[in-house]
Length: 338
Image (cartoon, rainbow, N blue to C red; front, side, top):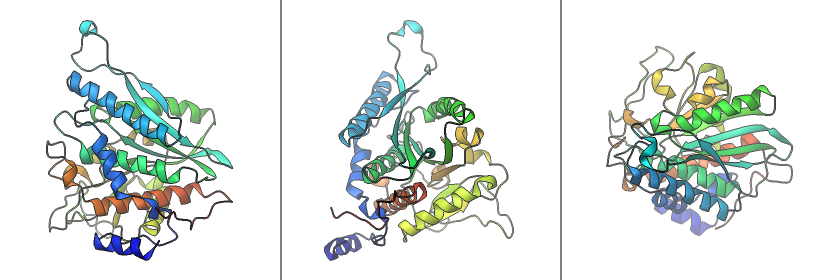
């Protein structure tokens, strides 16, 4: 990193990650551009205009992936909007978008990152879940042509907001692959709302009550949360460790001590993976437990804390790269100068 780059980062309040982190290649402008390219009407439960917007979001994401040199797979998802009659004309089509970065030595060992690209009817969906989608796309950009020993899989899920429809159907098919012994999942991470923060007192609520000597709920919304069940703690702790090493200014809180999840821990696309035994983590700014914009018309791009959002993605990129393990001819300390 040049002195000029470091100075520019400090001027906008973003401390540059340490030189050994591949996360240094994450670009804030690219993250925000991806969010801005998503139609603000893209709900499965919405009007034909929303259905068209959701299809447009899919097509724009595929175009970006094509431009990066990937060959994304479109996985058809079957779902009929409530109240729709067969004679209403051509039914909308829904798809998950899947990209694999194949491992060079252990390709059957797979690390999965997912985010949903649909939104609710009345919300533009900048944080929910434009931020998750932008993070996945930036991972695709930064990790391109950086071989790892294990496979990294990036999935853009559809129809999360109507009952995890895209991820549920994907998990059903994925279980057959697991039962056949074709893959060994290292873990799955659902990125669902990464961009809203506050330093105000009492800006954070918690769905988990205090547990003496174990957990004291945070009251300030200045962190990114990671949550899973105790049996998957090894994965969540490794993920957290690598994220903090890749993005030292990042603040995280990890909830991985419960034997079973509370209901609010199952509100994203990791839940179907948990159900089939895959170590799975929800990563989130905690949605309605802090954000007044959750599922509201005010969920707009100007409410996103670009500094802290960027830190999260820097940590994610580094964690993905290190957990999948750089191939022998790669250096974990290599960064690009852009």
